[in-house]
Structure formats: C-alpha cells, structure tokens
Image 1 (spheres, rainbow, N blue to C red):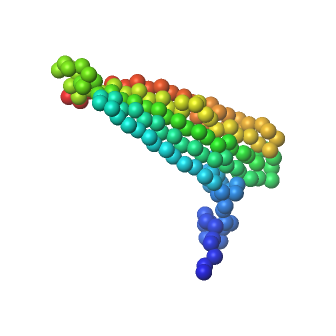
Image 2 (tube, rainbow, N blue to C red):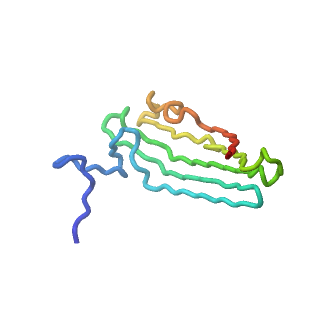
Image 3 (cartoon, rainbow, N blue to C red):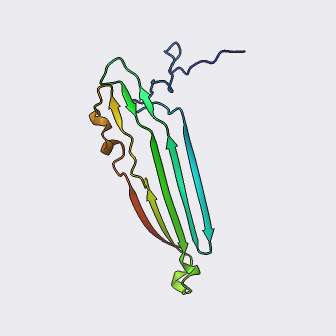
Length: 144
C-alpha cells in the first residue's frame, strides 16, 4: 500500500498541510469540516426555503506571534422566498411576474481573526473580510 503524500506547491518544495496551519493564500487554511443545507418547499404561488452553511475554525501557524492566526468558524443562513404574482392578481400586467425576498447572512456572523496575543491584525478586521454583513434584497421580476 502506498503512503499518502501531502500536497507540494513545486517539485522538491516543502509539503503543505492545509488542515494543520499551512496556507496557500495567507487568508486561512482549510477547515477540518464544513456542511451545507438547503431546504425549500412551495404551496400554491409561494415558495420558501433556507440555505445554510456551517464551517469549522481554521488556523495559520507561524513562529511569529503576530502571524500565528486563528480564524473562527462561521454560520451562514440565507432564508429566501418568492411569490408568483400572476397566480394571486389576475391582471394582464401581472402575468409572468415574480416577487422575491432574500436575507443573506441572517445571523450577521463574521469570521473573527486573532493572533497569538489576542489582537486582530488590521487586514483581518471584520469590515475588510466581509464588508456587507447582513443584507436584505427585495426583487421584482417580469418576463415579457
């Protein structure tokens, strides 16, 4: 049986363990676990659902305290709904019209980054990583 090899970036380069603190981009390693969920249903003209993603914490290991970073996990919930207007309002202008409502990042959960000293480096401030946070979108779609 062949031994498992860690990935290498270049021939004769060092092996990288992305699950144990090595990184390719400097913005966090791979989480050890993550899962997604998508539930939806419809009744008549209405359709509702929720999309969710859970992601475990990550880490970038370094000998320097300011570069040894821990990234928190994240819970991402997106409830969404749509309504077929032409099934409720029986008018010619309402044909093929859909009303949509989506709330992205319902919990307003953002990744928190701390170095070994407990400080957040400037480039990892919450507003830089996720400048929008929670957002609510209301859309109206009409096919002609």
